[in-house]
Image 1 (tube, rainbow, N blue to C red):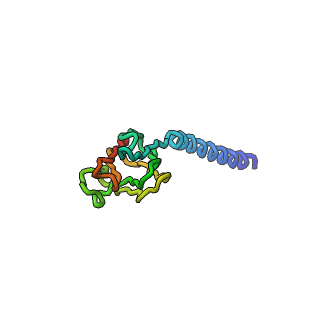
Image 2: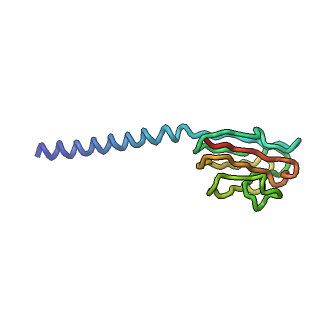
Image 3: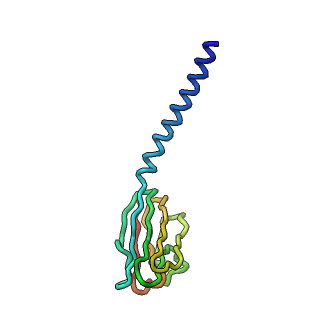
Length: 134
């Protein structure tokens, strides 16, 4: 009987240690992810900063702190000039839709590479940006 109590206790302690080890491995990667802000301006229409470099798993949050509608898209089907946008191979385009003044929109990048994006209402005025994911 003593042997079965010891065996049960040992199994429970082992399972608890395994769970703690798993949590310890996951938490640092979650804690390392960050959010980077990109603001939108009207005069001239542009993304600030123009280029951001982030790590895989990080999020970019676009903030329309301007007075006009803006957007964020990598969708070449929507662009006037399809070469103004790009994503790494196999990544589906993202699109914020039109963002009213004060609106925020975010995207978490899970695939490394270079993403070129634009603002649909201001593409002709050169409102483009770049996210580099390491």
